[in-house]
Image 1 (cartoon, helix red, strand yellow):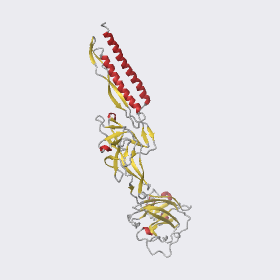
Image 2 (tube, one colour):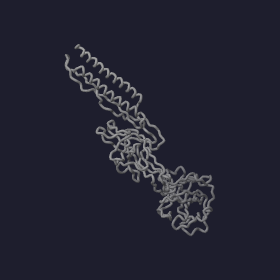
Image 3 (cartoon, rainbow, N blue to C red):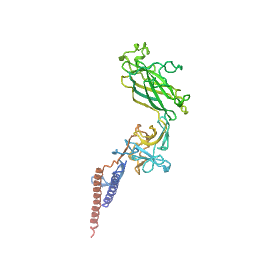
Image 4 (tube, rainbow, N blue to C red):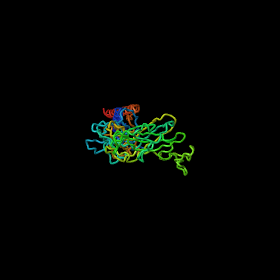
Length: 470
């Protein structure tokens, strides 16, 4: 081993440190790149040469080489944004994207979640790559294989017929009791107290709300309350007769009725003959005989599920061709106190047909369509992937990675399956630590300078050898 070998050791040091400086420069250049993952250069010594000495065989190193440029997948800081399609991944997961120009033949992986919907309704990254996810069945469960996340921006949402109504009211206990109709109605199924032809005289209070049929059409349904005795009220639900088969326009048609029973404290205890508390179901209790009712402290637990007033199937034969078997359950959250009758709140679960007005993505990765009828709907769900050895992923530019032999195959799933969590209205910033990079820059520069000194010093030594012959 001659003097000149130290020249090559110095050259190897220059090359290694030059490559390390390139890595540092790339990290610093991407300090503000969304989702960027920094790298580090790891050196390894070269194969040593064997030399013999008086003490035996020894090894002399032959320089340094670049062992690997390692990707660092530490979590980056999140930046909050005002864009609801900006997403950030917490954990080991990656968003999955695919090139539409290749027919989505292969998948790539990214932590940069600056997504948007393009003119065609596809969710894409800034380079136009499709973000991948799953279709959903009618129950909201993922089905099929990975597919580009797509939304038909001209889509409609199907209407939902009203099936439940919550009616929170107080009925004035001081209201006048309504006398029975004289003469009694000829229809044996009709009320003895409420007359739909004269509702204002035969009721004490009324409240109205819109209900929806299966076609999304609205119908005004009014519920009249008639006090028929102490702590006892009759309810009658009516619609315009012109909206149901067999009715007459302009005349009220009764579609549901029942009786509400209250205790002496003004609490509702029986709905249409069905007790709301288990104590009323005990043997020996005659619901029509108040003297047999249990004391207030013996009502027992609330019956589950709570009985509700019901407009039976077949009582709403809408004349517009909508489903004829619609049934509506009315949750009578009603009290009878000595204060004016009033509606505290009322709501129903139906909705009409709506057009898509806004798209958003929630924390579970669901693409949510918000429609003009106020009914949100889950359209697709975003997929995430994670790798056994993400450090071995290949960088392909534009904040994307590709699978390599050493990275292993991806595990693909959705939020909740162990592949990571999604934060909405957020972006993951670069994980480059500028302070650390500048320190590395200093040590790398010094290492480069030291290796150059090795070369110049060896050159001086060779010059001395040449000068031996003068």
